[in-house]
Length: 149
Figure 1: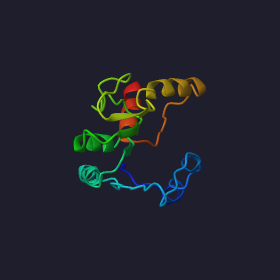
Figure 2: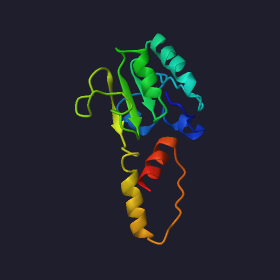
Figure 3: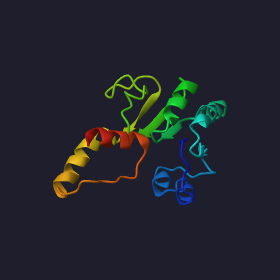
Figure 4: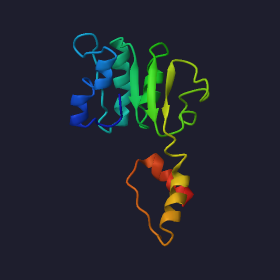
């Protein structure tokens, strides 16, 4: 489940990935993967999470910082939720602590927003004369860099 849309190429390769096959999962044979994409409409996330809960899925994977994990957390306290995010899951209200997340959530944090200041510092060291730096990013990462600048 994600607030964005999965690229078509990834949609084709993810279910049949070598990693999934190595551990014995073959879509359509012993595993079913339910994709849910909010297409950039964050208001759809609660309904998508509720639908997955109604379908009694075994696990929910929520990707990105768009609120999918928050919607899944609000929808269930029993189905395991694995999230990936570049934001701090503590600040997002997802987990009680990084060491012991608690509840039914666990995940991977890339600390994208927390590392923004350091990235900008390194970029400045590489190109000290630069006065304008552009970055194509999400709102949360951009906010971090603006604060660092």
